[in-house]
Length: 90
Image 1 (cartoon, helix red, strand yellow):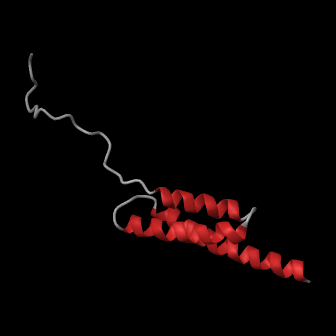
Image 2 (cartoon, rainbow, N blue to C red):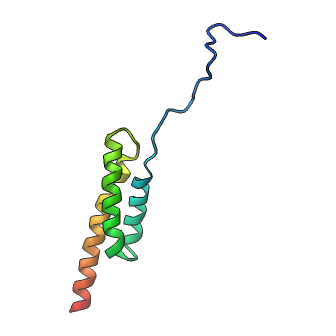
Image 3 (cartoon, rainbow, N blue to C red):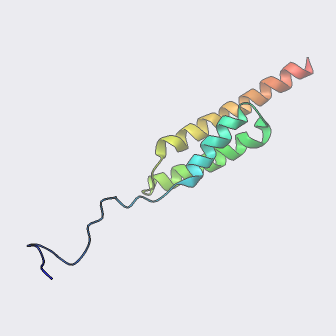
């Protein structure tokens, strides 16, 4: 068996090691769906998941933008919920 020059015995890894950030994705989905359905439940979940996802992103995980978007959408969900409540009460 022949070896090429510079062969170290280890296979190169073409992909970088990225730590997943599923909570950022979950927060984004909760925020988007919460704009249409169940904003009272999904809005706070989007804020919580987005906050935890942002914390993980600051420590090296990916999807920092998704985490911020989840927090913003969670706040928007709560605003939508207040608008619904005011519209239904009058």
